[in-house]
Length: 239
Image (cartoon, rainbow, N blue to C red; front, side, top):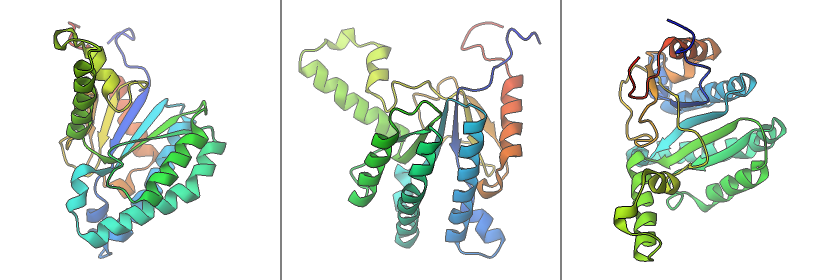
């Protein structure tokens, strides 16, 4: 294959971090131990992606559907998220990483939303990698809130329904200022996108691995990127 078609390093990598519970179960440990190990894996991957000069890294931390998990587990995840924000924000800021959150903030504890806002404000002018964390996020929710914004604008007379363009929709979604994911990685052997970025993954390359998230390390990421770079991205055009 000529280099002309070969992929460059992905600008935006999105990861569905799956398998913490199974990792813990296979070691006869409680699920929360899996989440703690998964957090360590996430920190390592953030550091590595920043070093590799990946422009945007998105981690799917908590989905709209995750609220249906046992209350104790959800509470633990929320406290873990809060303590991580408190511990890591300054460190990310020193590394010039810009932190951004996507998702529905209305159901989150005000202590968490306050910390999220502080992290975004502190790092908003940083020039390094954008670390986007999806929390209480769902692709259907993203489209729903975009439609609400669009309907308000059409009712307000900003434009007529027949004038609606793809750009209008794009601008109403969660991150209109950033590129769409080039590469979506999902760990733990599941092969679905689970209501993640339904609009923005339209042309992403999908990579599935059996590795459970706490075991996903720098070498595993390199393997995913190497696989991506062998692919030919045509975006609907002929080869």
